[in-house]
Length: 125
Image (cartoon, rainbow, N blue to C red; front, side, top):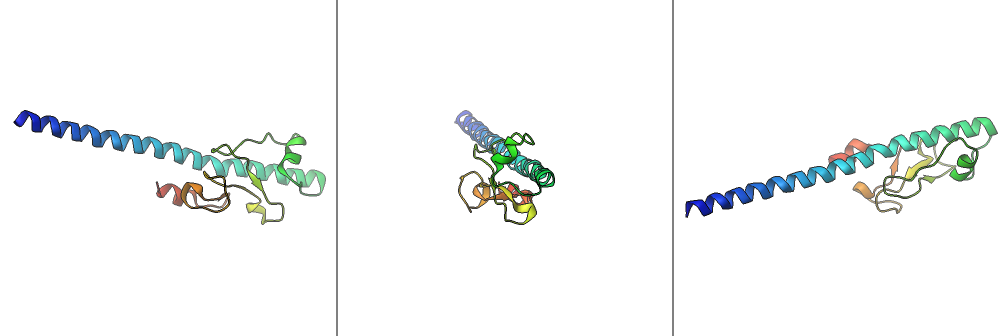
């Protein structure tokens, strides 16, 4: 009888440990994705500034910056294109639509701008 209780306790402990390890792995992956977005946005915004200085106007879209050879555009961590709003405030011209690929949302699905509080988003996970 005691042996079965010990085995049950050990199975429970291993199940709980495995659950925590799985959640930690997913959280690290999500955190890595979130941390990458502001860096990508900063690089794209810098290319936009250089483009404007060189040409005297903002590009119509990000493809125009890429075609000028100033940057090689990457996808956001969820495989979507970064979005560009030429008439927005300078630090909010480029953004990611988040994990859901749609405007708006919360958590990982939230739109992410260069001035988004990434630490706040990470704290949710």
